[in-house]
Length: 154
Image (cartoon, rainbow, N blue to C red; front, side, top):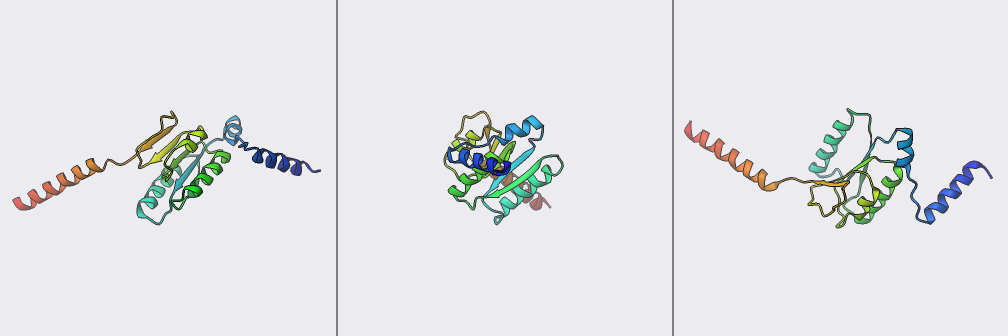
């Protein structure tokens, strides 16, 4: 039996037993763990497209690789994506998640940034960033008032 066939059989047996190959550790040993996994529902909405373009622009300035996954807002698809990321060797994840609970992200044991969501995780590697809509509303109202007052004073 060829070496490749043996490797594939071992990989298949490991997968059947629920083992996830730790590509991240392998890459860390080689010094090449520089991959960002981005999970978005799609690029159909303007906000997701802008998030993607902003992240892509910043990542392009670095030596990081960049993998983009689309969940279509579907829980099962997102769970499958997380499984792919676990074996891909990603060094961090940015996700616009539809999952109610974040255990799958916590299990990755790499830095995770969940977008536009209150964080329910206390895991030290899982963080959240969201938009303060109240502060945005306040700023918009102040700007409208200033503009209106300035126009009236002319």
